[in-house]
Length: 425
Ligand SMILES: *Cc1c(COP(=O)(O)O)cnc(C)c1O
Image 1 (cartoon, rainbow, N blue to C red):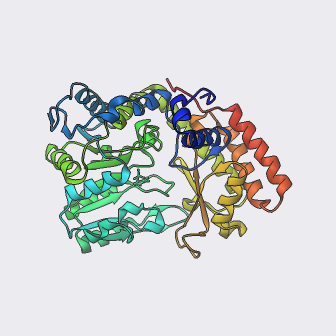
Image 2: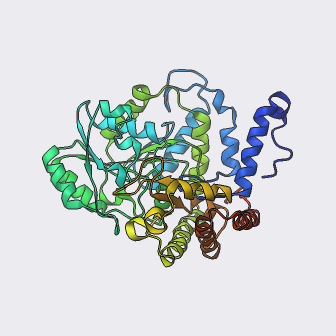
Image 3: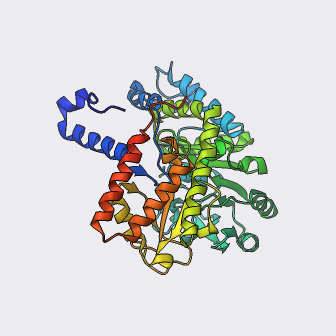
């Protein structure tokens, strides 16, 4: 979007803020975004986010609110729920979670009592902070136990260990779905083990929700998962926010609703729910299925470049939108060093710990990157290959200013050739 005419009121009233917003607009327009959890929303989605719904209080749910004046809030929340259910093929949805973390916390408290055990993937193997990292408050309420990958070079989960731990620890809930994991899961095995021990199954699809919605990867509901939690701003390409989906149990859906409000949150962010509804409509189009497929093709193109250059990828490669490269183990450059040099050339990604990490959290062995944002800009396999080549060239030549300057120009040209779109339909 053209920035020259934007923000007339902010410019007048608060020029410092306007300058920072324009700075970010320019950064996003001229660089390439490879953080696998980031994306660009449509202008229609921006309009919903910037709408008057931010003014409105509407605690409760459609038809049962605690304030008057709900003529239009009920409409948008009902539409958002209907579209979410259609998109993910389930009976119930709660669209109020402010983000992915509160969606997970709300789900835990709906399904478990304080002190209950939750079985999730080891965090160093790809699990998320909200799956029971010791720094989070929820570890004071629940007892988190772990399963792992059997082999970090294939990414296969150790399902025998999962079953043994489940039989021993009797978890109330078994979690699947991660933030730094590049392979598909055997959802049937999770469901079989959960049924054997009487646990609920929850898939945290924060990263891959858009791939599921676009039918590019499997839907855990097809295997009988009880609930799915997700963000709406990653591959799903909507506003920052969360959702909880319930396959078919009305009883569970009621528990989830009570847990989110009044259990955890106050008034829903109706402007955000309006934007979620807009994004869900976009995701229901055939064009979104093409988008989801292209994300995978672009990731495969990048995978080939890294493997051809002898750089180890966790999981041995990728079956989704992201890659986790062991740059330290492969070429002796730390995750932090790689992140820094790539920032200098206009490519944004994040350093990441890898399974069996030998370094620190602040300067780990790996980098994590993915294709959702560049695919939104229209890059295809040829350009994704080019981006991967430029990344490796920059990392290897991290001390050569002339080479880095040259790469920075190439990145900028690529970014300008593929502007951030205003609309996807
Ligand atoms: C991103 C993510 C979350 C948290 O989402 P926020 O919106 O940042 O709170 C939860 N779970 C997984 C697997 C994620 O990748």
